[in-house]
Image 1 (cartoon, one colour):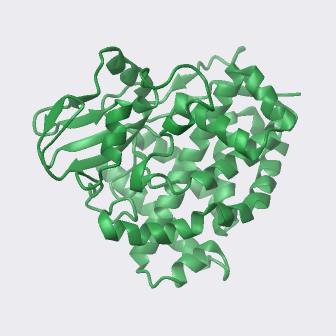
Image 2: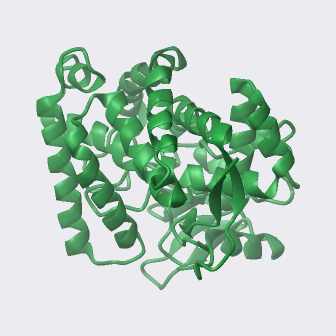
Image 3: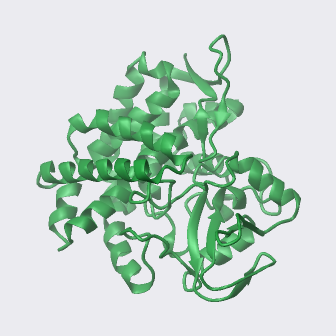
Length: 382
């Protein structure tokens, strides 16, 4: 999805990484810090302390100062998110050429067709989380022209990756990461001429490892991120019926994007970004040395009560940090919004989104890695 990070095994770290510590709802964690008027705080044990930045002003300041808050935080190849300066600009320009609004618009019909397939499957729609996962995988397969046979292993990877995100079994995580890289390699080998994947692999004089890194960032991040976004937006619409009805009436693409962005801001599933300081700096009331590990807590910044209050898709738009800010702002924003619009346009034609209730015995539970661990909603046929 992005020049963002998600929590991932050591060799598989797309850009929007959810924090591992503390293991609790990141919204509750951030809200507690805001109540204490904390803009930034050092967390962890001596020698392994992280500076967690939750204040909106402070997060923007750090994100827009890559010279001091470097993104070169991983020992593994990560393109473009692990780069700084001119190297980042070069690779980011390549990535942006595939994700420009006019380029992504060409795939709107394919995303709509995927939405039709998923929503028409009544059995699948009984499990919103599964429906979100399947839509995310199939939309990605159509965009990149990957083999349909990869759907099952990708869904399996999503499930295992989510389970691993909250633990620290590095050996198992590395094994799962290697499996994913093998799936990417398989997809590249089978990519038809003229496809996005074939063009990326053969038009830029990239090394194989660079191709895999870019596709891993696009896909591993997009799959889980998009699926989480679907459930977050669905929950927001279930609790705001007038907004749900407005979308059902047929909102414009611009209005849908504004509503989706605001619902994601209020329950941001992209929890944090990693950085490392290149020189001593003072931020959020903290004096930190060079080499300090940092987390930009997007979920926290998007809940800063000094900036945001309630639901207001227009007034909050300029300050919304769901897609990041600065040179590492998410290049996949337009792609994600196109996919989300396709899904919800089709969903709302046939279904009411309601809060989970009844005898299922499963209570909705938030995930410490962002989004929902168990779904808060169900889809009821109109």
